[in-house]
Image (cartoon, rainbow, N blue to C red; front, side, top):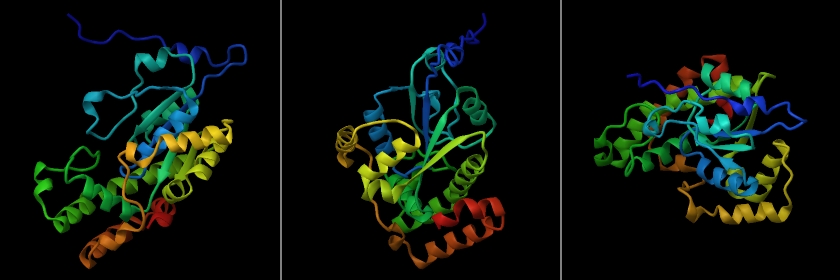
Length: 259
């Protein structure tokens, strides 16, 4: 008996140049703790498109890779792919070209994200970078943050560098969303994002989406400058790792604004 899946027909690609209609796909991919849940809720409410998660659910705790499902391949309308933690690589490049996908990438200062990720790991280990043992929940705050910086910073740098390289190519449509702007000026931020995506919505629809996706409905992070919570030891560890990584010109160009 064969346990291989039967191939599905990608009806979606055949619908592209049909009577002038071209279904659109917007994909939110983000490093952890960069406001992706909040952004997804706002955009989904505003667009009212079908949300399809093209990932095997069983593997959500691992570094995530797009793997288009039969639901996505057979759906002919506009689609929003909710937040994933997927890097730019050959597989994501293939799907972006095949379906003309617009990619939205939230950006947040690296150290702020790492502090939030450390806090998150007190109760949940489901983050896609490095190895987070169950014992991380029993570490002191100081030990936990040192561990997260050590195992996660390289992942964050790789994530942002990959999408930076993609954004410099004319082949791909990559739009960045600033975390601070998203938090401090949510209506303006969503309006600008929709404009970049060439999606028309009224001011009332935008305000409604922002109100709908309030922080109490999301796994929202503590905003502001979280680097203040770091000790001199944490800063030294972080600085030494960033300095070593930025010897690569692509890395330096990608993350210089996030340090």
